[in-house]
Image 1 (cartoon, rainbow, N blue to C red):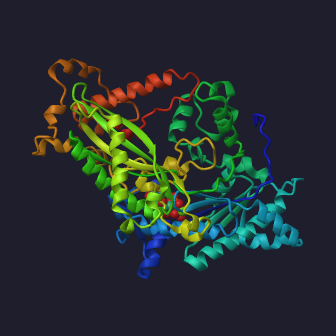
Image 2: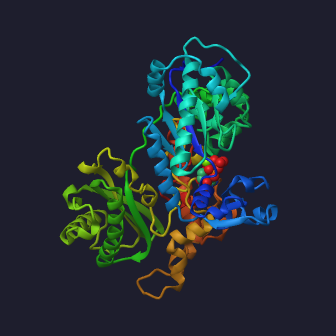
Image 3: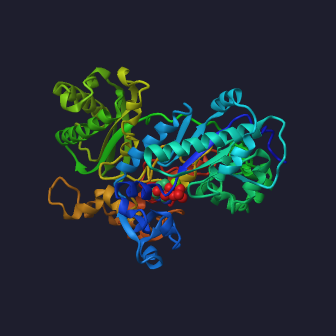
Length: 558
Ligand code: DCP
Ligand code: MG
């Protein structure tokens, strides 16, 4: 077996917990009359999830509302665009799991990995034999091999199963939620096996059935850790199935990925995953930003920043930590080139500004001092004595000190996780939108999109999001002379000859692209061209489109 020299260690015991039809369960807890009806959770024109009664009618996650209603005309719909209750419940679940191990990693809102290796060892020391019967009653065991591994993993996994059962019971009795669990010696297998028996069940896999489990998956994209972008790259060299990836020559994979990623991907196809369960912590930054109509005066900048800062301070208050670095983001619009560019600057900030812990009690002088720091940064980013045009302002706090009284306390943990808002844009954001890919990310250090805390945001069409986030579309109706009109943004006639060169980049939805104004199309195309040049200059690196914070980022099909 080609395992690229990695040893598949069985020393750990990992439990993956996934709540059943999460949003639907939370809504049912609020309204018990929903319990026995087919229930769909609606975001815009999509049913993001449904309870298991509805699933019997063929309703699937992220199905169009019209299609779902055709399948089940009696479907009861509840709007699920406000994620607050889901987020609160999600943190309660994680807090319960932390009773079993300090190593708990959140994945999205309803999944957690728990490394129970230590607990299993403790239990084993205090337990005596006859575990077999207990396991069989509660746990589905995946696979046809009954091989015997010398290292003792089988008994450890049995104890892990008992712990998983207890966890699920606790989640049910304390919070009223049913869940599934997967038990394995690594994260990858735990997550995959978890999905084998649903709902309200648990499944375990012994290491010698890993290959069988991997081969039960339809294609490489079904492997947690391989997203659409990687799957597309693999497909280009003819790798589609798990077997294809297992049998691929490393030299072929190295044409697409660096050597570590190439080995990592191939190992996944064998069920080998040495990545650790990473203890989830607080978000690394809390921020807000707002795409604004054209701002050309310092006074306007200050007012906008004041407004943003006030909102941001409420988020910081809810988070509970004391910020010590502040970052300003501006997007400058160049009237000549009709291009926009984001720039940032950061500065240390006195944590004592925030010690009151409550915005209402915060010394107004401190708010003014923070504003002064921001304006100083702004003047470093923008030559204010010359005409300038700003189309976006953002503030974030990026480093924190723990508030002493909250350190290690459950109360601290249950404070809201704010990174979602931090991902930025008051008007509403897409950067943290959980695509199936990001939900699929899981077990590795080689994630394609890196935020394990990411959670789904209400669904919205890409064009709608784009329109909402960019005020370009509103300029033609605005009356203020300071505001740019659409005509101002159009390409001048001399530049029109370049239009032929503007194409819709691959991965961008052509129909959306065609609806955009020419200047925006041009910006997208040039962002794409630049990302191509960047990646061409990094030989041997994976060719992943670097969209950063550009418009392109809004439109790339994930
Ligand atoms: N979700 C979403 N968009 C998706 C997938 C899920 O908004 N593409 C939301 C709704 C789900 C929640 O995230 O309730 C958790 O996702 P799961 O994939 O775990 O789905 P469920 O928990 O609803 O169902 P299951 O019982 O299959 O786990
Ligand atoms: Mg779930």
